[in-house]
Every structure is written in C-alpha cells, then in structure tokens.
Length: 123
Image 1 (cartoon, rainbow, N blue to C red):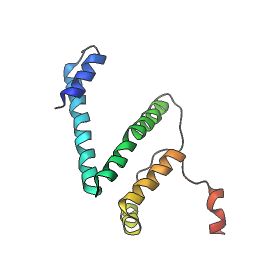
Image 2: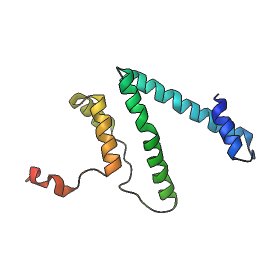
Image 3: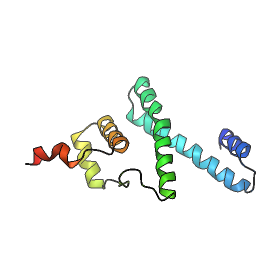
Image 4: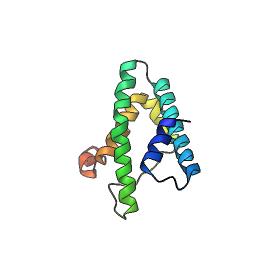
C-alpha cells in the first residue's frame, strides 16, 4: 500500500472512516501500477514514456471536471462512449497504438469533428 496516498488522505480529511481511506489509497496505488504497466508495454523509449506520462495530470483534471459537471447536472461535451471490441480490433489493424491514443485524446479534449467538417467527403 502506498503510504503517500494514505498520508495525503488523512492530512486532508478527518479520519471518519480509516478503512475507506485505506481502500482509496490502495485503489490509487493500483491505478498507478496499472498505468506504469501500460506505459512499459506500449512505450519503446524512455522519452516516449515521459511524454505520455506528462499528459496524465491534464487528462485526470479534465476527467475530474467532467465528473463534477455531471454531478452538478451540467454536461461538458458529448457523453463518454466506450468503443466495442470490434471497433478496437479494427483500429489496431489500421493504426499504431500511439496514433489511436493521440486520436482519442484529441476527440476527448476537442469534442471531435462536426458534420460540417467532413460532409463534403460523404457527398
């Protein structure tokens, strides 16, 4: 268990439920471990790992803002949709993992294209 996460939790909260704080600490530590595994698996260089890792704080902050806005009844952009396994398999055949991650990040941050952006290609 990460004592760092537990220390921060107990520093900022009155320990009403120490078991809950330990549970959150373990979950945060596991999320970090999983992120490290993903970065190690998809990154061929230390520089790429560092560049990907540098994107994490901004992305987490964006996700927190989305969650908070949804809790307040506001909607920030389109609802989140998970791609199906078939779509993921097709995408892996068409693009590298880095291209997929960059494309998904762009869509999440900008909201993606609007119909007017590509209607001429369909016509």
